[in-house]
Image 1: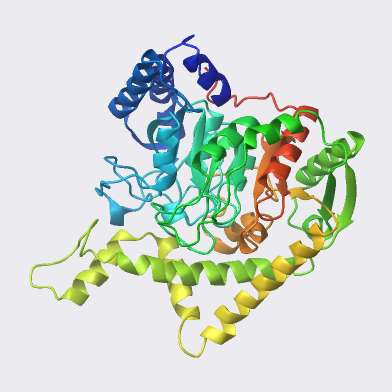
Image 2: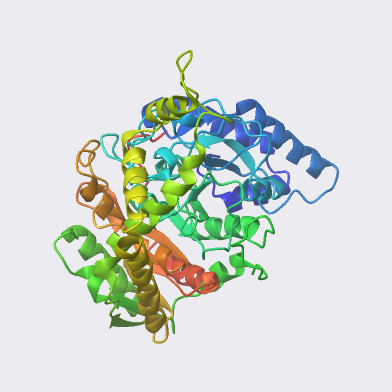
Length: 491
């Protein structure tokens, strides 16, 4: 059962070929068998999962529609608020916080019949590219346990790759769904900004954060997106537009990519940071698309060289504001000596509760928002953001989909970049432009390195063009199916 896709599970459960409870138990057993080595889960809610599965089975027995994700076992990144389950954003400052409600994406998953197994590991407050910055334990890559799974949604990617769950939810602020998907050999989809509600997401950078699915097939990612997408009045940035049947787009993609126009940006293939094996794998993938009838041309995104700096100024400025609420007064950690002042309690709580990377980003964001520096840094970064979006708009006047590497390298070694923040930040160099422009993007596996590590192919489409994006990704998946599985945690 652990090898079944989400679509397979939903069909079999709805047809009573297998019970949702049996599927949930098989995945819980898998978690118990391998996750001590992997570190994908921070919290497993076995009793809750079996209760949810039992409710799905009972609905089917009553003749009711169990939902499009009937009995599908899923994991949730620990920044997604989950009723009755401790939610910490992988930070000590939120240790012990049990939310009284589900965020919108979580509630919609449950309403679709999915079974939530627990909370998945991530970089603290989603700030990182390796899932080494979790306050509780690092997550490892199931393809090589000495390598990182990517981040910040590393647990979400590792859990799906290792067959601990059929699908998962992550968040993507600068590549945090797509980059770990690439490093773990799974599909990771970042929707258009506003397509999925952010209500119930522990915020990092509010103008960039977006919830999305990770799965082992494009069809599964489409099914999950269809379940969680849609307008939500509780999110002021939510887009009020009908939700298409995304699964139909994947069916269209299964028919091929003939006629689709793909653009390959020159700027993404230049420079010294792109691993030669990644470059070769992406070039081969583009050749496959062309051979299958797609039109491929070179394009330019000229402001790409400024995007990384602009992103880290905007994201950290928003983080500085968002994380100011964690003060030890209302919830989470409180550190205070007897007789200490309120200001002393604030300082002690934040000093003990936040890890070094979160502190670094808060300090940077606070600096760029200071009087006298706001125009010089933050406003200029927003101007660059507008130029990056304009570059993509120009590209999409000529092509349907931009295609490029997801990550500049395969998975790197644990500890390799923790002492060099800039090198860690460069892991997002190909993904963050998509966030700055608010576009949908997807990573699909396109091969293995000579060291047996997955390589990801990224596709980016115009706003709300998820159907086109899914058609292109499913079309590539049909041309070059990825059937390898992680050797480190094989059953």
